[in-house]
Image (cartoon, protein in one colour):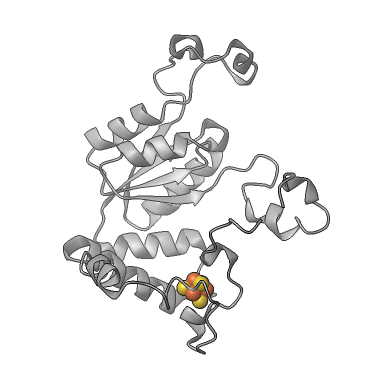
Length: 210
Ligand code: SF4
């Protein structure tokens, strides 16, 4: 369709990374208003500048060697975070038990909160009754966030919150949030596997519009 607004989502060149100058005609980097860019860059100050600096060091020092769990610990330590919140899906509680042990073994304090906390019924939020087949209680991401806010955690880890619940948790969390596990009940919580296989085995991911 000709009315599609092209963006980095359509790019195969990634010349902004390679530095080879072969920008596509719609390149956001090439065509960007410099003042707009500079205003955004000027926002990296204080704690957020430190996050950028630490993230870069974690990336370059552990590149291709550290797992995401190790990188998360490394990042927390270099940022000086002491108390880690975990917002977990109850379906991943065993993995969260393990994560808590690992974090504590690195001297970090842990406070976790399961998604069904508060035991609020789906019917109380006027959720469609057929959704009771996966459990009568809601996942409760706002209550998870507010509990971790009350605990004054330094940063929070998402462990497999559902699509949508993760958005609400992130929106209501006072502390910065990172996702360790992105829930995918079909792909072993590895959503990108569906993309890797979508050109042949998993073509059903595509809709009708070209
Ligand atoms: S900034 Fe330009 S080169 Fe980089 S990904 Fe976007 S379109 Fe591609």
